[in-house]
Amino acid sequence: MMILRLPTIRDEADLRQAHRELELDGSNFLLDGFQGDETPFDEYLIRVTDSLQGANLLPDRVASTFLVAEVDGEIVGRSSIRHELNDWLNQFGGHIGYAVRPDHRMRGYASEILRQSIVLAKELGLHRILLTCNDDNLGSIRVIEKHGGELEDKVDDNGRLLRRYWINNS
Ligand SMILES: CC(C)(COP(=O)(O)OP(=O)(O)OC[C@H]1O[C@@H](n2cnc3c(N)ncnc32)[C@H](O)[C@@H]1OP(=O)(O)O)[C@@H](O)C(=O)NCCC(=O)NCCS
Image (cartoon, rainbow, N blue to C red):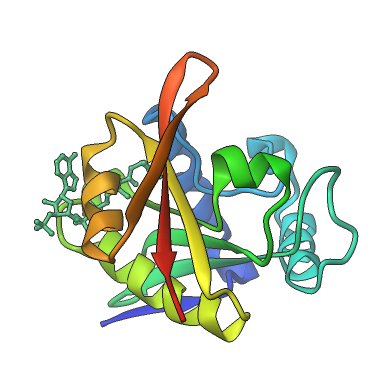
């Protein structure tokens, strides 16, 4: 069974490792301005909890909920649920971002992360959810379309084509 939960200080080693894995994969795991080894983990956790309340936000950021996905005591992925859209999120970032650690892929974890995130988004009052993914990200396209994502358009994101999908969450 998967649970989505807030990260704690006990997760530091795991999350730093997950972040390195995703960076090697051309993506990222920890958000909110996390700069790898330069970022003290306790400060990062404060940013995560502040972000939940919309407090002390970094420039151009909105309030967001960052959760780790745990299966059988192991962190397998993460979700970030943005409480609203700004111009950049409306065009490129979307409401929900997720990632699964490379060794844990193709087991339905991203699908489950998105399923649970959609429920949480509803509790935050989000009744239409924007999701974006690269036009060649077959895994993410499948995950979004499985959850009812309807393709709005494809936009240019620095030379890469990005898909924008809406999920009705009413
Ligand atoms: C995209 C990503 C989240 C998929 O995670 P995952 O846990 O492997 O996905 P799931 O196991 O839930 O797969 C869901 C579906 O997509 C398919 N799928 C997953 N990865 C795939 C791939 N690389 N190519 C083709 N299909 C893929 C699965 O077969 C499954 O299909 P099914 O429901 O018909 O069985 C993961 O590869 C990842 O974290 N990538 C880097 C970060 C990223 O791209 N995040 C999304 C940003 S929009």
